[in-house]
Image 1 (cartoon, rainbow, N blue to C red):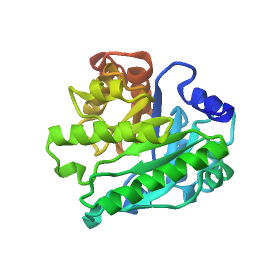
Image 2: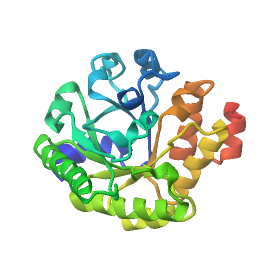
Image 3: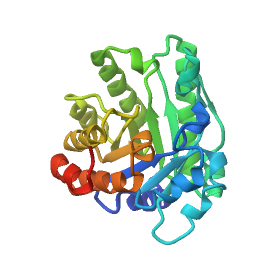
Image 4: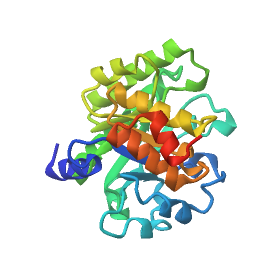
Length: 271
């Protein structure tokens, strides 16, 4: 890992701690949705996040949230994939690059992210998706910026839990073998620790759908951290919370301080 990558990655984790990342890139795939339509206002409420994940076209619109000392790190997504556009029920999970790591750095990115889906049902599509990640790895090395590999199983919502776990375990290892610096993926339950143990880079657990209760999201984060995750990447569960700033503080307490969920929920009035 080059010096620039090491420095930027150390900032995310503040040395050896865990990271709380908030994703606000949903419009890139799903269009308008509650909480994300006024993105500058949403970003301003997230100043206590360690990093914010966004799409490249939004960097200019939310720049004020990053242009000061102590601001969150900016993570910019490098590719677009049909697997994320769930409203259209795509099935092929095809991925295409939308900008290079160097172009993302020019926008202000401290970290970049590339998504990967495999076992799509097509050997050609799988190979193309892996190639997108491999190119992003080469680009991030030239740019000196860390790369997150997002492992997103094709059709993950329809997979039985055991098959989902297996695909994520294999995908995380493949992403690490390709050269990403950390992995973002779904929490798989009791066996998630096996994924963390077999993945030789830090793993961040994502929140996926908005959970029925905000306390459920805190519990997911706590379980992931107990299993060895180095943090979480939550989007809707933060931005669409009753009070996003208060929920973010509760999430920080659980992820970064190891606070107990029940006590934290009571302290921050999380239901």
